[in-house]
Length: 160
Image (cartoon, rainbow, N blue to C red):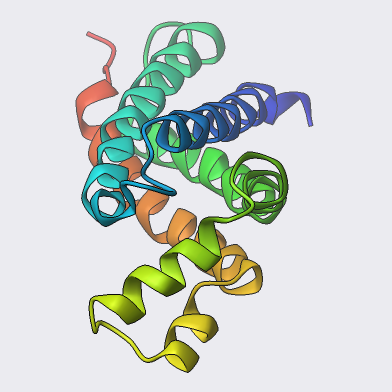
């Protein structure tokens, strides 16, 4: 387990930052009165996610690999962080929707129906805790793997 200490740390940090971002979204009204902006504005978290991965990779390279890291080592670091995030994602979704934004699903359902994007039954099936727990974990695995592959290119450092 000590071998993955850095990845575990950064996976937990990622989830913590995600929860703080959701607090920010709520304060900006993107879960309520400005919910029409949510679909666009929530995408800005991707920039924060990439920054977290870059910092995590540089931390791993410095502390665990003596200042050098191959692409494979970087990718595996990122994938391990991704697994931590995917495993913790359902818990994060529960915290977000139970404590930070308990009206989010009702508001999203109403928004989707009012704008004609979905019927009420479709929206209810999509905007619920179980759906978001699954989407969060699967999305974390997919986006985490892609991010890991790209960030590893920019953070690898070979011995001379």
